[in-house]
Image (cartoon, rainbow, N blue to C red; front, side, top):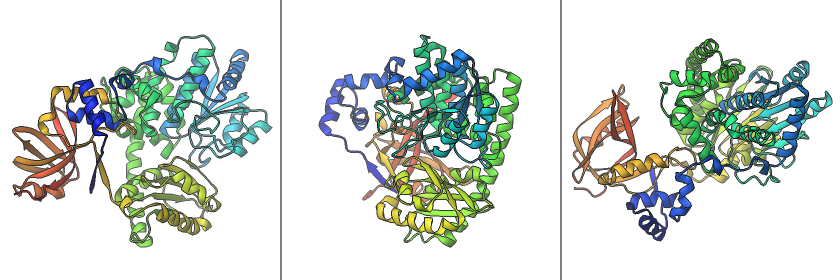
Length: 569
């Protein structure tokens, strides 16, 4: 594995070190995040809700707000239509509760993944009409729903699209389209998730109605779920909102969220983004992967403790079942990769299967991407010959652009540079695979396929001081755009006897450098055990973290890679 060390301007590092009166490694981390002065870094380290952008800077916000207020005044129902993933369901929850706060009559609707597929559906539109709603607000979907919007208009239902996926050159003819990625939208931050756009919409309505922002501030925790799960950049107002959202989760206003946090053993604490992604998000996603995702919205919006408890337990059980299904599909997909893909020539993986559950293809695509470090597309083929696929990419290949180039082989697609969804007819799968792999082969070099670890710089073990740990704490929340810093340490000695743990997969050991000693753990690194017992010095790539175990808190190195120190004697 390649270690890629960031190389900030030494003059900037020196300047920051003097301004902050800090160590070289702290100054290096600041420089790596683009800071050049103390003043510039102040907003980053002191998040305030005053830093949020005016929602009315977003294109169409004014007409969208006016349209909602018309329904509020006439007490006409509004349908909130969300996607079935965490971003879509948490965003739908934000819209639903926000609409209630401003006096609206909202109902929510999440489509069935297997029956209706992704996006605004005819069944959902008909349901809106049947409940007397003349307005649908989408969340995390709709930006490519040209036919669905046209159908809604034909039966007298207006559509306001709130979405964050990359739009086509033309937009659906909706009443309003709220999407900061619109080419004609001057909104200063483009990195909002679907729930983030939904929250800005509610913020606009609150502002227009002359109400206090505090009336919707509790919704920030729900928006944070979508922001964490959708892996959008933790920068700008995302960082501000997530900072407050994570703190709210210590005592959330949503009973359902409280139940989910308890299941993930995160009660009464401020979770990290990673803990939400791996502990909470899969349980919310399980509702839509294997059944009715409306349950997720009901769970997050109910004020009934018994309903919340029952739904949380139900989703927990479905998540366990999802893991079993996912593992089976992954094993099957691996067999297909070995049988159908020539990894010596193909820089991308495209596989499909008829018995694969569509609810797990995204997770399987992610696992294949990690396993082979190349873009992966996994397609669930239905009996009627139309496949639903999920794609995941690596740095160097923009999925949305690549799928646009091969759209003649697809029935539909949408998404982001690193993650996307698509539909394809079975008879077109071979030509799609051939075309997509050709593009990947053009875009990616052999070096792009080598897994790498990006490190901030060299960290000597005696640099891990209380001030350094306090700095890391203030640097959080971590996520895309502000990842937890990784470091390397050179010429480190092993102290004591390393242990293989976790059924033979992981290693626990102690390292020493110039008299400073720390415990270390390497998950899935047991193949390096032989390196640790030779008595030779090693180099480590790692993150520094606090390990909590049996009411004890201690600094620990979470090791990501191990190498024998070159030329060491």
